[in-house]
Length: 126
Image (cartoon, rainbow, N blue to C red; front, side, top):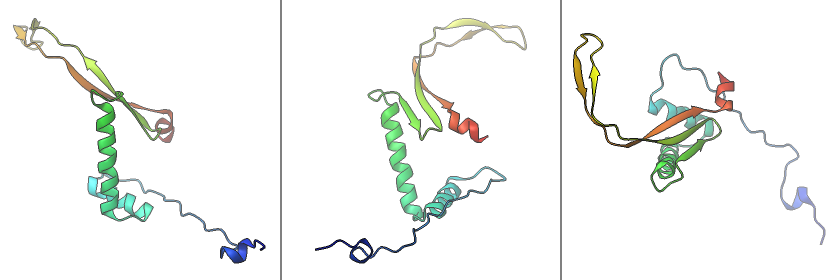
């Protein structure tokens, strides 16, 4: 038995070119729905599928940034999300900058904050 790729697999001689999506710049801030719509147009997916992808991405980010997670998430080489532990502060005296009056600043408990850092790829786009 001989192998003939053009005949056996019904391959055409012309390669299928993938369409490259070109996003248009927004004149005002895009809503979540507009972002979903643009991604659906660019990827030829339905809006519901794009929303499911974003929900899955949100779940992955939440898991990675949780206390049990690693505390970092690299978003496609564009930005890095990282958690930072902020220590508790005790109550202290302060001064009102407008009146000069002494005030008491309340104590705050320890907390975790999310820091976002733009990476080289994102900075290069600007």
